[in-house]
Image (cartoon, rainbow, N blue to C red; front, side, top):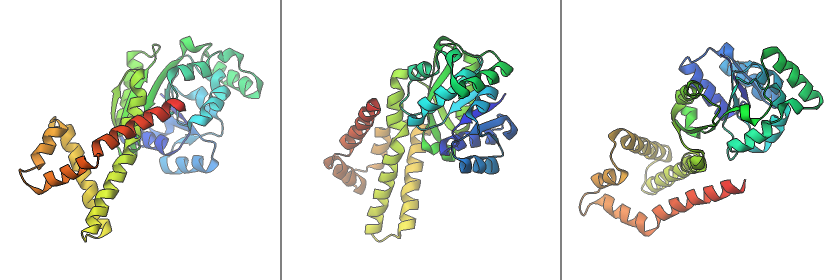
Length: 291
């Protein structure tokens, strides 16, 4: 099995790192391409994978193909490579805001690919297997990972189309679980996954920074304040996941009657912390729909 990547940015490298760490396949069976020659050189050097200067070459060899480009570049990439996709290839997209229908439409009518890129793609597909001829045959898995994947603590939403078999989905889930957790969700919830998981690390970083600022105001050195605040967030999150208790119950365990913590909680409630976070998630959802 060969796993290919179009785009070798931070998220692609996080996925590749998980694959290698869990020994799903060796580095020699991972291939990739990127519009940046420097990015290709760095991926080859740091990860030991094979890199090509052609997206079509990657597509023609990959059994599982990751789209790991920015949303604005996806249409150009799909138009370039659609004639080279094998019927057996499973396409995994980590592109934010682009649903399965968008990808199906962009890759349909592969046999009509024209121009130099289309001819090259057709030849490549002919050597490795039958090419696709429409969206009804494409195997597509839409995913939404998040940046904690960079440290092996990601949480990825996963949604396959109807052409993906259970065995194929299991392979994809194994890959996505190599750098954190992966959960299958209906596509109607994928934008919510992006808001609560994909964007929220930025909110958490702001929270950590604010906690540290408060500690600095109390006299603690800044670097030490960051460590205390970040560890508190890490430990609290782990407690939610491993205890199975409701977050409200865990919060109550910290708040002693007439104690110090409940005063802090009261202050946060007065400042509208809950409403602000809910509004932030809704703002992300609204912006996602505009893209």
